[in-house]
Image (cartoon, rainbow, N blue to C red; front, side, top):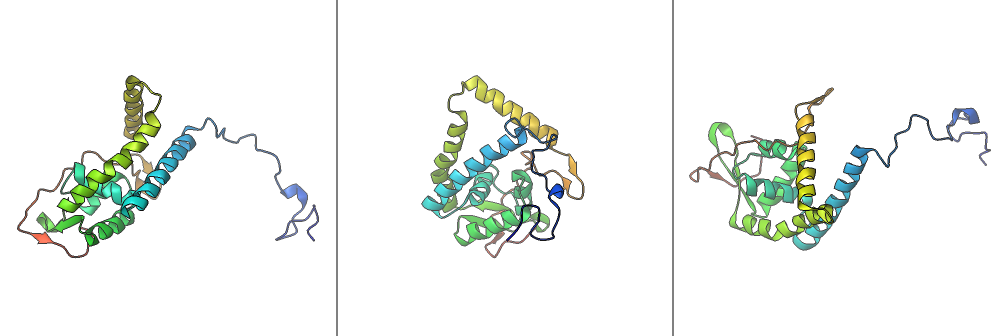
Length: 198
């Protein structure tokens, strides 16, 4: 039996245990990063659940499809920067999408591997768009169009402030890059083998 004055793994005295909230604590109800994270997390969970149920694909797969729908010809590295996600996440999704013949890899200039949606990929994109739009509707319900415009402006300003900042040991903050140019299609150099980093 553990007595009230004992600590299970080392017999520490009761005075070593902090039982009261700290005076320096963050007000989590007013802490914007937490609120943004919670909203994002809830949206991703709902979107991912619905996309898995309907299409057998997850949110990360959708993000790659969406990026290629917006910017055909991006390489896996460019998609990583474009989306602001981990390179391994994109590589895994690309492998799934190539295996399902939704994305085609080509041989590009200087060893690059531009990616394009196949016709099946484009059809999948159009089927998935309404699920993604549902998240937008959940966020903007009850807001006037001008408020939605201002909200998006504020979010873009926040991204602009974060873009280019460094985290010690990690380099640039991955916040997504909308300015990545696509690699142009050369249909004579098609490749359908497993994806690799360009």
